[in-house]
Image (cartoon, rainbow, N blue to C red; front, side, top):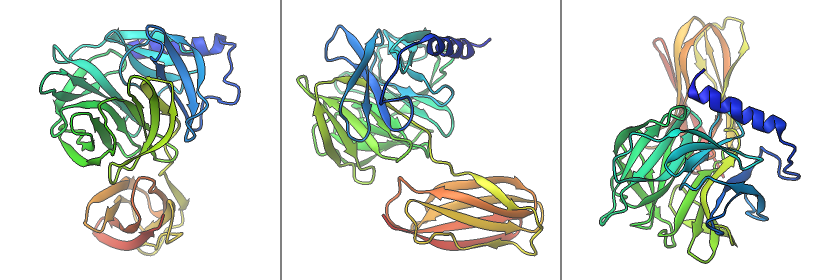
Length: 358
Protein backbone atom coordinates (compact mmCIF):
# COMPACT_ATOMS: atom_id res chain seq x y z
CA UNK A 1 0.00 0.00 0.00
CA UNK A 2 1.39 3.45 -0.96
CA UNK A 3 1.89 6.28 1.52
CA UNK A 4 -1.06 8.17 0.04
CA UNK A 5 -3.35 5.12 0.14
CA UNK A 6 -2.41 4.59 3.80
CA UNK A 7 -3.18 8.22 4.64
CA UNK A 8 -6.54 8.10 2.86
CA UNK A 9 -7.40 4.89 4.74
CA UNK A 10 -6.67 6.64 8.05
CA UNK A 11 -8.80 9.60 7.02
CA UNK A 12 -11.71 7.37 6.04
CA UNK A 13 -11.50 5.54 9.38
CA UNK A 14 -11.58 8.83 11.28
CA UNK A 15 -14.66 9.96 9.37
CA UNK A 16 -16.46 6.67 9.95
CA UNK A 17 -15.85 6.63 13.70
CA UNK A 18 -16.64 10.30 14.17
CA UNK A 19 -19.95 11.14 15.78
CA UNK A 20 -19.52 14.87 15.16
CA UNK A 21 -21.79 16.89 12.91
CA UNK A 22 -21.44 20.19 11.10
CA UNK A 23 -25.16 20.86 11.57
CA UNK A 24 -26.11 23.45 8.94
CA UNK A 25 -22.62 23.52 7.45
CA UNK A 26 -22.30 20.01 6.07
CA UNK A 27 -19.21 19.02 4.08
CA UNK A 28 -19.82 20.08 0.50
CA UNK A 29 -21.22 23.09 -1.29
CA UNK A 30 -19.60 26.48 -0.87
CA UNK A 31 -18.08 26.11 2.57
CA UNK A 32 -14.65 27.42 3.48
CA UNK A 33 -12.38 25.75 6.01
CA UNK A 34 -9.11 26.81 7.54
CA UNK A 35 -6.69 26.96 10.43
CA UNK A 36 -7.26 29.97 12.69
CA UNK A 37 -4.13 31.16 14.47
CA UNK A 38 -5.66 34.18 16.23
CA UNK A 39 -5.40 32.38 19.60
CA UNK A 40 -1.83 31.17 19.08
CA UNK A 41 -0.36 28.88 20.36
CA UNK A 42 -3.79 27.23 20.22
CA UNK A 43 -4.70 26.57 16.57
CA UNK A 44 -8.36 26.00 15.74
CA UNK A 45 -9.93 24.38 12.69
CA UNK A 46 -12.93 26.44 11.55
CA UNK A 47 -15.61 26.48 8.86
CA UNK A 48 -17.36 29.45 7.29
CA UNK A 49 -20.13 29.79 4.68
CA UNK A 50 -19.09 31.24 1.33
CA UNK A 51 -19.73 33.92 0.07
CA UNK A 52 -21.20 35.44 3.26
CA UNK A 53 -18.04 34.87 5.31
CA UNK A 54 -20.00 34.62 8.56
CA UNK A 55 -20.70 33.11 10.97
CA UNK A 56 -17.41 31.39 11.71
CA UNK A 57 -17.84 28.03 13.41
CA UNK A 58 -15.00 26.48 15.41
CA UNK A 59 -14.89 22.74 14.76
CA UNK A 60 -12.03 21.87 17.08
CA UNK A 61 -8.37 22.35 17.96
CA UNK A 62 -5.76 21.22 15.46
CA UNK A 63 -2.00 20.77 15.50
CA UNK A 64 -1.52 22.03 11.93
CA UNK A 65 0.37 25.33 12.01
CA UNK A 66 1.65 25.87 8.47
CA UNK A 67 1.03 28.68 6.00
CA UNK A 68 -1.24 27.73 3.08
CA UNK A 69 -3.23 24.62 2.23
CA UNK A 70 -5.94 23.23 -0.03
CA UNK A 71 -8.44 20.44 -0.54
CA UNK A 72 -7.63 17.65 -2.99
CA UNK A 73 -10.04 15.78 -5.24
CA UNK A 74 -8.80 12.30 -4.29
CA UNK A 75 -10.57 12.38 -0.95
CA UNK A 76 -13.22 14.95 -0.16
CA UNK A 77 -12.45 15.20 3.56
CA UNK A 78 -8.72 15.73 2.98
CA UNK A 79 -7.36 19.26 3.42
CA UNK A 80 -3.60 19.22 2.90
CA UNK A 81 -1.35 21.65 4.76
CA UNK A 82 1.82 21.55 6.88
CA UNK A 83 2.83 21.15 10.50
CA UNK A 84 6.40 22.12 11.42
CA UNK A 85 7.63 21.28 7.92
CA UNK A 86 5.71 18.01 7.70
CA UNK A 87 2.88 17.41 5.23
CA UNK A 88 -0.40 16.65 7.00
CA UNK A 89 -4.01 16.15 6.00
CA UNK A 90 -6.95 17.42 8.06
CA UNK A 91 -10.30 15.65 8.35
CA UNK A 92 -12.69 18.51 7.60
CA UNK A 93 -15.39 17.71 10.15
CA UNK A 94 -12.91 16.99 12.98
CA UNK A 95 -9.82 19.16 12.67
CA UNK A 96 -7.65 16.09 13.24
CA UNK A 97 -4.32 16.28 11.41
CA UNK A 98 -2.96 13.02 9.95
CA UNK A 99 0.80 12.95 9.35
CA UNK A 100 1.89 12.03 5.83
CA UNK A 101 5.64 12.67 5.51
CA UNK A 102 8.34 15.33 6.01
CA UNK A 103 8.49 17.70 3.04
CA UNK A 104 11.76 17.29 1.15
CA UNK A 105 13.30 18.97 -1.88
CA UNK A 106 12.59 22.59 -0.91
CA UNK A 107 15.62 24.88 -1.29
CA UNK A 108 17.50 25.13 2.05
CA UNK A 109 16.58 28.28 3.99
CA UNK A 110 13.12 28.55 2.48
CA UNK A 111 9.85 28.23 4.36
CA UNK A 112 6.57 27.11 2.85
CA UNK A 113 4.23 30.08 2.37
CA UNK A 114 1.60 28.77 -0.07
CA UNK A 115 -0.11 25.64 -1.38
CA UNK A 116 -2.74 25.18 -4.08
CA UNK A 117 -4.26 22.08 -5.68
CA UNK A 118 -5.12 21.87 -9.38
CA UNK A 119 -8.31 19.82 -9.60
CA UNK A 120 -7.98 19.53 -13.38
CA UNK A 121 -4.63 17.73 -13.28
CA UNK A 122 -4.56 16.47 -9.66
CA UNK A 123 -1.36 18.44 -9.02
CA UNK A 124 -0.42 20.12 -5.76
CA UNK A 125 1.70 23.27 -6.11
CA UNK A 126 3.85 24.67 -3.33
CA UNK A 127 5.60 28.01 -2.87
CA UNK A 128 8.79 28.38 -0.85
CA UNK A 129 10.25 31.74 0.23
CA UNK A 130 13.52 32.80 1.84
CA UNK A 131 11.86 35.96 3.34
CA UNK A 132 15.16 37.75 2.84
CA UNK A 133 15.92 41.29 1.64
CA UNK A 134 15.08 41.25 -1.13
CA UNK A 135 12.78 38.24 -0.71
CA UNK A 136 12.55 35.55 -3.35
CA UNK A 137 10.06 32.79 -4.01
CA UNK A 138 10.08 29.54 -5.95
CA UNK A 139 7.32 27.32 -7.35
CA UNK A 140 7.32 23.57 -6.81
CA UNK A 141 5.08 20.59 -7.43
CA UNK A 142 4.47 18.45 -4.34
CA UNK A 143 3.92 14.70 -4.21
CA UNK A 144 1.10 14.42 -1.68
CA UNK A 145 1.92 10.78 -1.07
CA UNK A 146 5.59 11.18 -0.17
CA UNK A 147 6.07 14.87 0.63
CA UNK A 148 8.72 15.23 -2.10
CA UNK A 149 8.84 18.69 -3.70
CA UNK A 150 10.17 19.22 -7.24
CA UNK A 151 11.37 22.67 -8.26
CA UNK A 152 9.67 24.27 -11.27
CA UNK A 153 11.43 27.64 -11.16
CA UNK A 154 11.76 31.08 -9.62
CA UNK A 155 8.57 33.13 -9.42
CA UNK A 156 9.51 36.27 -11.34
CA UNK A 157 8.09 39.81 -10.94
CA UNK A 158 6.66 38.86 -7.53
CA UNK A 159 9.34 38.24 -4.88
CA UNK A 160 6.92 38.41 -1.94
CA UNK A 161 4.38 35.69 -2.74
CA UNK A 162 2.47 34.74 0.43
CA UNK A 163 -0.47 32.82 -1.00
CA UNK A 164 -1.47 31.01 -4.19
CA UNK A 165 -4.74 29.67 -5.56
CA UNK A 166 -5.48 27.43 -8.56
CA UNK A 167 -8.75 27.59 -10.48
CA UNK A 168 -10.64 24.87 -12.34
CA UNK A 169 -8.73 25.65 -15.55
CA UNK A 170 -5.39 24.96 -13.86
CA UNK A 171 -4.44 28.67 -13.75
CA UNK A 172 -2.31 29.74 -10.77
CA UNK A 173 -2.69 33.14 -9.12
CA UNK A 174 -0.44 34.57 -6.43
CA UNK A 175 -0.61 37.42 -3.92
CA UNK A 176 2.58 39.47 -3.90
CA UNK A 177 3.13 41.24 -0.59
CA UNK A 178 6.17 43.08 -1.97
CA UNK A 179 4.27 44.81 -4.77
CA UNK A 180 0.70 44.62 -3.48
CA UNK A 181 -0.38 42.94 -6.70
CA UNK A 182 -2.30 39.92 -7.89
CA UNK A 183 -0.15 37.96 -10.35
CA UNK A 184 -0.75 35.01 -12.64
CA UNK A 185 1.94 32.33 -12.47
CA UNK A 186 2.99 30.06 -15.32
CA UNK A 187 2.71 26.49 -13.90
CA UNK A 188 5.49 25.25 -16.20
CA UNK A 189 8.16 27.89 -15.50
CA UNK A 190 7.12 29.91 -12.43
CA UNK A 191 7.19 33.14 -14.45
CA UNK A 192 4.67 35.63 -13.05
CA UNK A 193 2.68 38.32 -14.86
CA UNK A 194 1.23 41.23 -12.91
CA UNK A 195 -2.58 41.33 -13.19
CA UNK A 196 -3.10 44.49 -11.16
CA UNK A 197 -3.15 46.11 -7.75
CA UNK A 198 -5.13 44.42 -4.99
CA UNK A 199 -6.21 47.85 -3.77
CA UNK A 200 -5.09 47.25 -0.18
CA UNK A 201 -1.82 46.39 1.49
CA UNK A 202 -1.10 42.71 0.93
CA UNK A 203 1.73 42.58 3.48
CA UNK A 204 -0.66 40.68 5.74
CA UNK A 205 -1.83 38.22 3.06
CA UNK A 206 -2.54 34.80 4.55
CA UNK A 207 -4.17 32.38 2.10
CA UNK A 208 -6.57 32.25 -0.84
CA UNK A 209 -8.71 29.84 -2.81
CA UNK A 210 -11.18 29.68 -5.67
CA UNK A 211 -14.72 28.56 -5.02
CA UNK A 212 -14.75 25.70 -7.56
CA UNK A 213 -18.51 25.94 -8.01
CA UNK A 214 -18.65 29.65 -8.91
CA UNK A 215 -15.10 30.43 -10.01
CA UNK A 216 -14.79 33.37 -7.59
CA UNK A 217 -11.42 33.96 -5.92
CA UNK A 218 -11.41 34.62 -2.16
CA UNK A 219 -8.56 35.97 -0.06
CA UNK A 220 -7.97 36.03 3.71
CA UNK A 221 -5.99 38.81 5.46
CA UNK A 222 -4.88 39.43 9.05
CA UNK A 223 -3.29 42.74 10.08
CA UNK A 224 -2.26 41.72 13.58
CA UNK A 225 -5.52 42.80 15.21
CA UNK A 226 -8.34 41.75 12.90
CA UNK A 227 -8.93 39.74 9.77
CA UNK A 228 -10.78 40.19 6.50
CA UNK A 229 -12.34 38.05 3.82
CA UNK A 230 -12.11 39.59 0.34
CA UNK A 231 -13.18 38.60 -3.16
CA UNK A 232 -10.70 39.29 -5.97
CA UNK A 233 -11.30 40.15 -9.62
CA UNK A 234 -8.85 38.00 -11.60
CA UNK A 235 -9.13 40.36 -14.60
CA UNK A 236 -8.03 43.51 -12.75
CA UNK A 237 -6.53 42.29 -9.46
CA UNK A 238 -8.81 44.58 -7.44
CA UNK A 239 -10.17 43.13 -4.19
CA UNK A 240 -13.52 43.84 -2.50
CA UNK A 241 -14.14 43.55 1.24
CA UNK A 242 -16.80 40.98 2.13
CA UNK A 243 -16.56 40.95 5.91
CA UNK A 244 -14.22 41.58 8.82
CA UNK A 245 -13.65 38.96 11.49
CA UNK A 246 -11.43 38.01 14.39
CA UNK A 247 -9.96 34.97 12.64
CA UNK A 248 -6.39 34.72 11.41
CA UNK A 249 -6.73 32.05 8.71
CA UNK A 250 -3.16 31.04 8.03
CA UNK A 251 -4.50 28.31 5.74
CA UNK A 252 -7.80 28.39 3.88
CA UNK A 253 -9.63 26.28 1.29
CA UNK A 254 -13.09 26.01 -0.19
CA UNK A 255 -14.50 22.53 -0.65
CA UNK A 256 -16.44 21.76 -3.82
CA UNK A 257 -16.34 20.24 -7.29
CA UNK A 258 -15.50 22.01 -10.53
CA UNK A 259 -18.36 22.42 -13.04
CA UNK A 260 -18.39 19.67 -15.60
CA UNK A 261 -17.19 20.42 -19.11
CA UNK A 262 -17.94 16.87 -20.16
CA UNK A 263 -18.62 15.56 -23.63
CA UNK A 264 -21.38 13.10 -24.38
CA UNK A 265 -22.40 11.25 -27.51
CA UNK A 266 -26.02 12.18 -28.17
CA UNK A 267 -26.54 9.84 -31.14
CA UNK A 268 -24.66 6.90 -32.63
CA UNK A 269 -26.39 7.38 -35.96
CA UNK A 270 -23.70 8.02 -38.56
CA UNK A 271 -24.07 11.60 -39.86
CA UNK A 272 -23.51 12.42 -43.52
CA UNK A 273 -21.00 15.21 -42.97
CA UNK A 274 -18.66 16.92 -40.55
CA UNK A 275 -20.40 19.83 -38.85
CA UNK A 276 -19.97 22.22 -35.93
CA UNK A 277 -23.37 23.61 -34.94
CA UNK A 278 -24.03 26.99 -33.41
CA UNK A 279 -23.76 26.84 -29.63
CA UNK A 280 -26.92 27.05 -27.58
CA UNK A 281 -27.93 29.10 -25.75
CA UNK A 282 -26.21 32.02 -27.44
CA UNK A 283 -25.64 34.56 -25.94
CA UNK A 284 -24.88 32.56 -22.77
CA UNK A 285 -24.01 33.04 -19.09
CA UNK A 286 -22.03 31.18 -17.88
CA UNK A 287 -22.64 27.82 -19.65
CA UNK A 288 -23.47 26.76 -23.18
CA UNK A 289 -23.64 23.57 -25.27
CA UNK A 290 -21.60 22.97 -28.41
CA UNK A 291 -22.81 20.16 -30.71
CA UNK A 292 -20.80 18.62 -33.52
CA UNK A 293 -21.03 15.69 -35.95
CA UNK A 294 -18.32 13.42 -37.36
CA UNK A 295 -19.17 10.90 -40.15
CA UNK A 296 -16.16 8.63 -39.52
CA UNK A 297 -13.72 7.81 -36.74
CA UNK A 298 -11.55 10.88 -36.26
CA UNK A 299 -9.15 12.54 -33.89
CA UNK A 300 -11.16 15.53 -32.70
CA UNK A 301 -9.95 18.80 -31.22
CA UNK A 302 -12.56 21.27 -29.97
CA UNK A 303 -11.13 24.45 -28.47
CA UNK A 304 -12.38 27.88 -27.45
CA UNK A 305 -10.46 31.09 -28.21
CA UNK A 306 -10.87 34.75 -27.30
CA UNK A 307 -10.85 37.61 -29.84
CA UNK A 308 -7.05 37.86 -29.61
CA UNK A 309 -6.64 34.24 -30.58
CA UNK A 310 -5.68 33.04 -27.11
CA UNK A 311 -6.86 29.54 -26.21
CA UNK A 312 -9.15 29.72 -23.17
CA UNK A 313 -10.45 26.12 -23.07
CA UNK A 314 -9.71 22.73 -24.59
CA UNK A 315 -12.97 20.75 -24.54
CA UNK A 316 -12.08 17.75 -26.69
CA UNK A 317 -8.70 16.28 -27.60
CA UNK A 318 -9.22 12.59 -28.39
CA UNK A 319 -10.06 9.90 -30.91
CA UNK A 320 -13.83 9.52 -31.36
CA UNK A 321 -16.13 7.19 -33.21
CA UNK A 322 -18.62 8.44 -35.82
CA UNK A 323 -21.64 10.10 -34.24
CA UNK A 324 -23.17 13.29 -32.90
CA UNK A 325 -21.63 14.78 -29.75
CA UNK A 326 -22.37 17.59 -27.31
CA UNK A 327 -19.71 19.43 -25.28
CA UNK A 328 -20.50 21.62 -22.28
CA UNK A 329 -18.55 24.86 -21.91
CA UNK A 330 -18.64 26.87 -18.67
CA UNK A 331 -16.99 30.32 -18.61
CA UNK A 332 -17.17 31.34 -14.96
CA UNK A 333 -13.67 32.87 -15.01
CA UNK A 334 -13.92 34.74 -18.33
CA UNK A 335 -15.07 38.31 -18.98
CA UNK A 336 -18.03 39.19 -21.20
CA UNK A 337 -17.28 39.31 -24.90
CA UNK A 338 -17.00 37.33 -28.12
CA UNK A 339 -15.41 33.89 -28.20
CA UNK A 340 -14.81 31.34 -30.94
CA UNK A 341 -15.30 27.57 -30.83
CA UNK A 342 -13.07 25.77 -33.34
CA UNK A 343 -13.23 22.12 -34.30
CA UNK A 344 -10.59 20.15 -36.18
CA UNK A 345 -11.28 16.57 -37.28
CA UNK A 346 -9.13 14.92 -39.95
CA UNK A 347 -9.07 17.54 -42.74
CA UNK A 348 -12.18 19.35 -41.49
CA UNK A 349 -12.09 22.68 -39.65
CA UNK A 350 -14.97 24.98 -38.70
CA UNK A 351 -15.41 27.95 -36.39
CA UNK A 352 -18.53 29.45 -34.74
CA UNK A 353 -18.86 32.71 -32.84
CA UNK A 354 -20.18 32.68 -29.26
CA UNK A 355 -21.24 35.62 -27.08
CA UNK A 356 -20.74 35.61 -23.30
CA UNK A 357 -22.83 38.21 -21.45
CA UNK A 358 -22.51 38.57 -17.66
